[in-house]
Image (cartoon, rainbow, N blue to C red; front, side, top):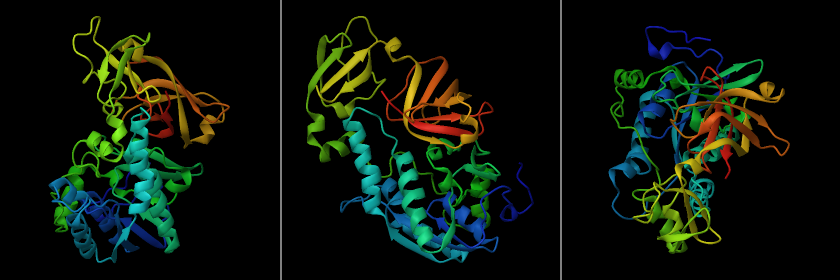
Length: 379
């Protein structure tokens, strides 16, 4: 179904979106996207109030510009200003405990286990669309409004998650872990907008955040993530052996936390028969295991934490589509099914050069539009 366009962006409608009758909660981070999303719903005459989630306290030292924009007073002030422009109530709510458990502990644990985490996915699944959604319902809210670039469409099969119109800003990969019952309560109006249109809408409404830069990287790490983890887990920088797949020790490393699958940097210099890549890390032996690029190539994968958004398709067994194994990477032809243990078995039409354990694998349909299922890549 296509967007109904009008001359006034605030009069756009979102066919097939979840019902927006009743109270709506707008998640407002202080950025231009969430600010415009809140304004668009408020301008439709809906009962909207804004919530800014306090997720992370960066400490008592001087704040960098990055931290000021996403986690500090500047973000709160920007969100409050946007809410005033929308003429809606605004509240700052402390979710730091939930964020620490669901994101920061997970982030450290995954790296310590030799996997590469995706903290933004965890934050979406468990905090922004988990804890916040529960908080919204406790306040009598029925719809959560966010500034994500993705589309939620409803029909007789339930909610569908589609890529955004603006493919350069599309965030459907990061949202692919959301369960159907979560998606059923979410509206993402910017899925039909391009980023330039969003900024134009902000300028037209006189929002101070119209030209505010996008947030990038990890919101809770102001610098090197290895130092962040090492400060909490000093054992993560304990030296150990670097060995080949046939158990030959060829050097030493300066801590497992500095090595992820597919990495070349930081390996011993002068090794013959290279180039060499990290194939896996072995926490029990505190070892980094290396091999050739060919050793990284995979014809299949198995995923845990499976989320099937189109159960009607998977009821018949194998489903064909395009597998995306890393944010913003190109999809590759694949087929997938849910196995007897509840995992997602994925077979690639051609071997893929790198699969990183801990990352999210998302299966889109063959049109590269709709998310069909997702899961966390296992070793």
